[in-house]
Amino acid sequence: EIVMTQSPATLSVSPGERATLSCRASQSVSSNLAWYQQKPGQAPRLLIYGASTRATGIPARFSGSGSGTEFTLTISSLQSEDFAVYYCQQYNNWPRGLTFGGGTKVEIK
Amino acid sequence: QVQLQESGPGLVKPSETLSLTCAVSGYSISSGYYWGWIRQPPGKGLEWIGSIYHSGSTYYNPSLKSRVTISVDTSKNQFSLKLSSVTAADTAVYYCARVSKHGSGIYWGQGTLVTVSS
Image (cartoon, rainbow over all chains, first blue to last red):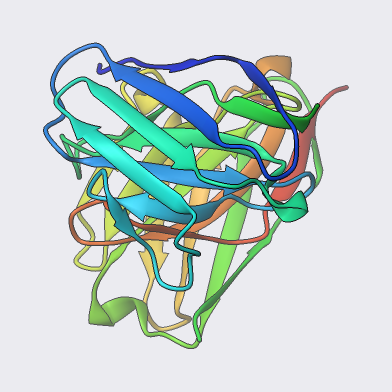
């Protein structure tokens, strides 16, 4: 099983600042990596797929990069609605499986 | 626009079988995509349980495979999850989901909390 590790577990950021979230895979997943945002009491929402392609309707302040085993989600200027938990997810072996990282909580500093 | 709605008991006794159904509207299951289940224990991360293709092919998380059955009923445009021999560790919000062909995009239902307790 491919293990996804996210860091940091919690990121304290002021509104308007940049946030950088990391995700590492235990083995290469090529560019088969997605990012999701989850707010309290809600289902996750797809932000990025293919490591760097924004999903429909996702603002340009969200960007993804990386390939292989190292990935980054960057939020260029945090808005109030961006404070949430973010998960990375690999789908390199789909449909035989997919795995999520443990999540990074972005909180207000 | 596709909508997914989970239904089933919110409370299940230990050692019994958890059964959930996901009703799909706005899209025909027979038309494609994978359909699956993902769970999230309270305050914790996400775990893929398994998926089914509209043709009936199934794929399960190896850690749960011995206890999981996912089936599809195209006539009712719904799919179901059965998880046997549950314990308190199976307490979670269970999401049904539509997954794209390559696994690159998950569209989620709203989720339903299932508590395992006597």
